[in-house]
Image (cartoon, rainbow, N blue to C red; front, top):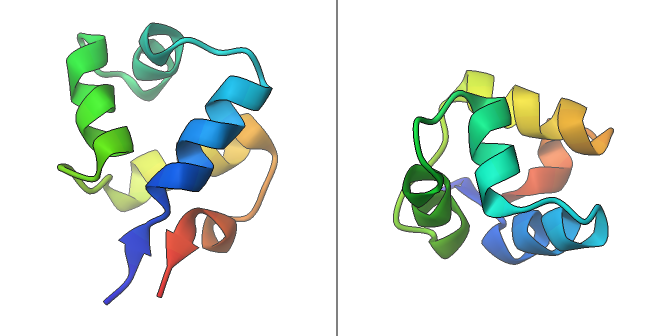
Length: 67
């Protein structure tokens, strides 16, 4: 099963100095809680959200996944 590498997503966000709120807004979430669920692994992103995260961090989508 392919899953989001939550540790990498969190590390990338911190390396770039982004808050959860900022990334949540970039992804179109109405509050950071939705993004927080993503980082904790309690929610899997849609394909379009994966693409947006990859674009934000200038990496390939595959680099965000485990499996």
